[in-house]
Image 1 (cartoon, one colour):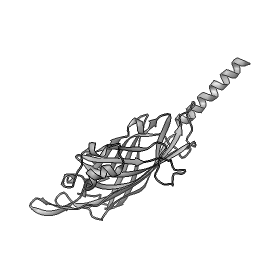
Image 2 (cartoon, rainbow, N blue to C red; image 1 turned 120 degrees about the vertical axis):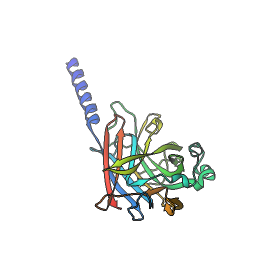
Image 3 (cartoon, rainbow, N blue to C red; image 1 turned 45 degrees about the vertical axis):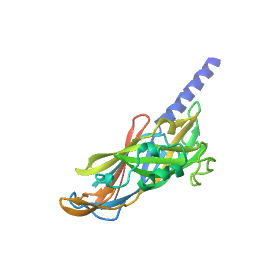
Image 4 (tube, rainbow, N blue to C red; image 1 turned 120 degrees about the horizontal axis):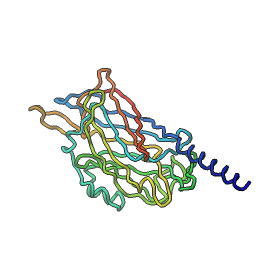
Length: 272
């Protein structure tokens, strides 16, 4: 009887773990737009601002698995002219000091911001399921223009908020930056920009905690400079439109890669 009981417990435990492992992340772009309107062309770009919000959850509950790699892509946009705008060294943004200290060096390079809402669970054996949320961490997001990309600065101090909709705060103070790089890709044959970055291990698993981003809301401001293109003065932005789809819609898509290397794509579209 004792051996049978042990065997039953082992099977139930294995099924429980398998059930957790089989659950899948669900991704949704809740906002994916560029502004102001304009198709643009390589010889006559249109400076753009970008709004980009997404959610992550598990198919069975609010807390998904941590995402390791992000690729955020905008059809028909280029970052060719980002070096025409004030920039900061990534190392100056990645300071453990409060954001106010970073701003003293990098204020002119700030190009946007937003909010990151993270769900936290204590590590358990077997692992906690997707309905388990032990703590919340709401992080202030600040975006800085750096050579070749953006610094994604995240900040929060204790105490932790009591809900995902609460104020900025975290179980442990956070003051760090993630290095995101601009790359060029094609979306449906149109030259496009891709902002790509890996989330460091310590921002996914830390001191017996598993952290999953549940929602991010972000905006990259529309900034304008004048440059010469083929002998003509044109306006450009940190992001500039140089094309769009024939149907008048601009695709925005995000590629999410989780810790098992499973890749998923979420898409949105808005007017050119």
